[in-house]
Amino acid sequence: MQEDMEIEEPLGVLYLVGYIKDYVQNALIDLIDAHVTREAPKMVAEQTRQKNYDFILISTLSIGSGYAYELIKWIRQSSKTTIIMGGPHVTALPEECLRAGADYCVIGEGEATVTNLLKILIKGEDPSSVDGIAFFSEGSVIRTRQRELIDLKVLNFPDFSLLPSDSTYKTSIHIQNSNEKALPIMASRGCVNDCPFCSSKLTWRRKLRFRTVGSVVNEIEFIVMKYSVHHFHFQDDDLLLNRSFLRSLCQEIKRRKLDIKFCFITSVKAFLALADEEVELLQESGMRVIEIGIESLIPEVLQYLKKTYTIYDIPLLSSRISKFNIDARPLIMYLVPGETYTGYRNQANLFQETLGTTSYLKKNWNVNPFVFTTYASAYTPLPGTAFHCTVNSLGIQLKQSLKDCSTGVISFLPNSLLEDCPQKSGKLLSKNIHELIKQAKQHSFFPLNICLEEYLNVVWEKIDAIRTTKEIANELYSMYSTKITYHQTLTATTLILIILAESGFILSN
Image (cartoon, rainbow, N blue to C red):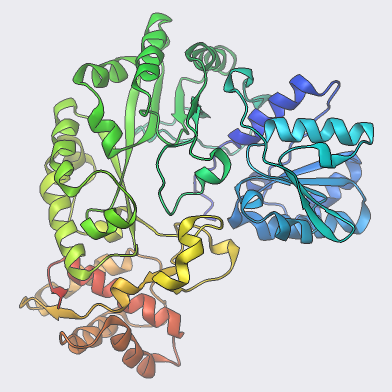
């Protein structure tokens, strides 16, 4: 991880801690966030040994699972403390986590399950009575029945008191030129959508639940008063899905005269469903930024992603952003099944023609046709998702390690691009090669030990409307095999062809 990357407070863990304190008497809790301390697993394990904890709870995403497994290994060398694991990765792969050394795995939503499990273990009773867990018994994995999701009305505020006052946490609401502290918050859990790339439904089961408006605003007011924080980042999957709740929330923030600013993520469909007065109400109550999950402007990709909006909704989106002068950040993905080079060219044109006309994006984001190198995140097969289950039938999985489960790492190339046959559109490459090289250099995935200009020219020479991407890459690998691996060759070739497509040099045959 880059040292200057944003690190948000572990909101889920902090809600869990608040819940445990409410329901487990005399619970004394410490928090070690290795994501912030950057300490080696051996050092963290030594801290736990010195404290001699009764229980150690470890929450991890897939990208951090290797660290978690190493931590468990070191803990086991000097302690028999009961280890409980939870989080999205554990929900997807509980047996793997048990084999890594966890005593119990919490599957799904954690508050009620962890609390119930702790009470049972403290009493020395049979853990098989606890819903929502997995554990070993006589060499076999026991998985108890699924636990019902909790009523969010009983959820207490997150316990920020456990965080160090001089922490490096930096929750951002993306307000330009603002260094003010921000904190995360959640008003709901779950999402009604069924996106193949999303792991949210592993935990929330596509059941959308909202807290009460009063509890959310109470939490905001508490944070303002206690911590003097006025910026908030809602971490809901889509804050706009319940318009009645949204209106009540904004009205209550205004009624209490809370001087706050906030941002959230939403979808194209949910944002377009708002009435004009609802957008105005959001702005009046403190909305400053919206991150909109556009995902793609390629029709075949939207169909694969099960989106209910189409590219014909994008001009409407652009019009609304312009009308209210909204700082709307587009969230785009690339290397998704269904992509073609013609699709990339059309997407670049549509992106520039529609969102490029919006006043805010045009002024502050310098909208250009290079959607891929400027705005996009890599499509990633997270464990437990529908995409992960079908990844090998949809393309080539470049990386198998769970530490690469990040949208900042290219771990997959779709067959739709690998089998596409690019053809030249008639433009001369030589006049624009320096701009293309500039765009390519913005991307961190090109091997450092190849000359990009030379590589790009060789790719260009081999584009003949007959060779597929994979065939072009195979020929380049025979030339550069001493410098780059086969997967690097596939990746570099595909990315260069995407840049050529977005700049109008190639189409699909």
